[in-house]
Length: 214
Image: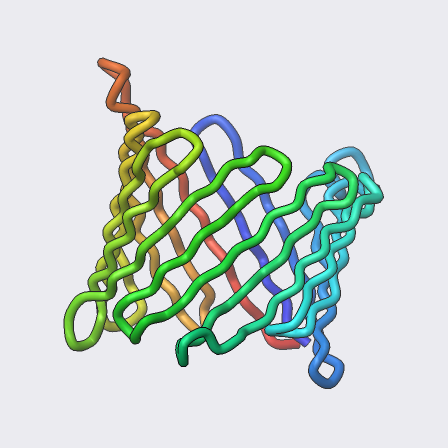
């Protein structure tokens, strides 16, 4: 059985969440709560339950909203290349989407997402550069908006990574530093700046996750 605690801090607000996970054979059960669960005394707010068979399906249940989210995954061989397909449906919101990705080789991957409810479609290409593939380039094309988003990630020894993003539609520039540890969880610092606004400070966010074996 495993437990994780996550804290998120921003200048104008903060939040916290906890997750408890245990395995039964090849099936994983998970329960999660947020600070809303205890904000005004114990309640069902922020409570979520899920059951997962890795690589096959995930079923999430939002307790306060009494809503289900279904996700089914499968991997096929397409022209001798692994093709991953994911189907997602949110029952209450009636949102359905399909994700597909194909890895041409360890350094090149192409993926696409289509939302049947909104008609939005995004195509992403991932290129991992170098012998150790620690520099990752990700251009994303939004077909419905005819816009591009870009991200560059640099991974370092020890679990650190630095990621820069830019959204051409909103002129939003982002920078994220992430440290991951199998023993101590992860720590993330993000800064974002709207290039269309003047005389404004970047928005900051700090997120920390601690993992425990029970």
